[in-house]
Length: 212
Image (cartoon, rainbow, N blue to C red; front, side, top):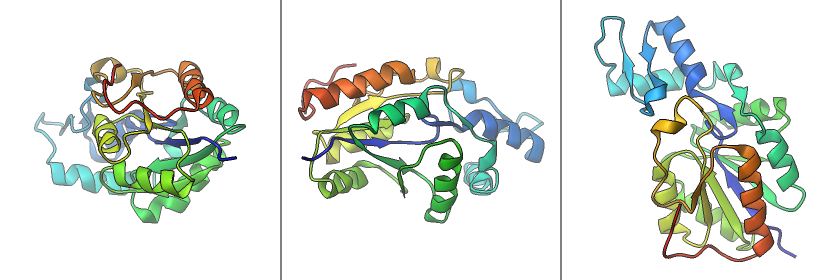
């Protein structure tokens, strides 16, 4: 019998990232990162001038993988995955360069999370569709903090249940619910129950009439 499938993001879903990236930016580059605004590019130099977009991506490449050990576990995340793994297969789909895959696997394992990890660049719709097909088209739930990925999955894998989860409490109030997600839950206790209910119902997602 085919088991359900959970495809889950990592940064700001399983592991805190922006708060630690902000600390590192201040220490290493004297750059302020107002992550609580909900904007990933809200970065300024000491003189108040904005940081160029190209430099932001360069600093992200510097943070990953060298500073990944700074990241901390989101409360309840490991326990939720452990409970869900009793009845479902789990894949961590993370938008990092492929050279970071082994580092991410080791990082998650240090927090007691040991599941298949796939790296990706760009929209997650196509890789989600491939994973669903690979696992035999089971009932699938996708969890991510970025609205753009929910839109991508809605386009390429519309029968996948989509849960919008923003685990950073300083940022979550500033991030509106993703229009293409079926639900928005920022707590892993409630998220675990929502995911388990989708698995228990054993039905694909409704492809029209999406509501929060």
